[in-house]
Length: 176
Image (cartoon, rainbow, N blue to C red; front, top):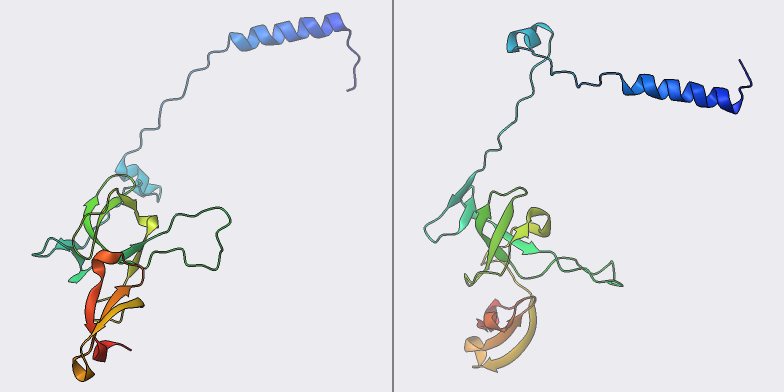
């Protein structure tokens, strides 16, 4: 099958091949018309888009709730080059979801625990659900002031991961 062709013969064959290819009718094939009955006979169901049901509800305070609990989340920290991998990648501050935008992909608007809206929208991948309640223990970064004596002693504390707006007086008996 190894034939030696001269350059003239190759050029003639190539031009003939090109001419034949250019005159072939290249039309797209129409889609197959399949009815639901025919697809069931063949054992195939037509693909149907499944709708996601959301069990979100709003309480009387305008907070987003799921199964009667407020959804609290924390956001991912911005990654910098040379950031240590063993450091946590999530913020310590808790936020609550205030609004859900059903765009594609879904985005969320957040509020801090004092109901102040956070600027911007966040994707679901940037949020992590947490199960902290207001009566849970929260980490104290440092004690700023003290007042009182004995059983009436109180500390003015800065909470870890929260800014100075959240500083508050806490009874000494509540500290662990």
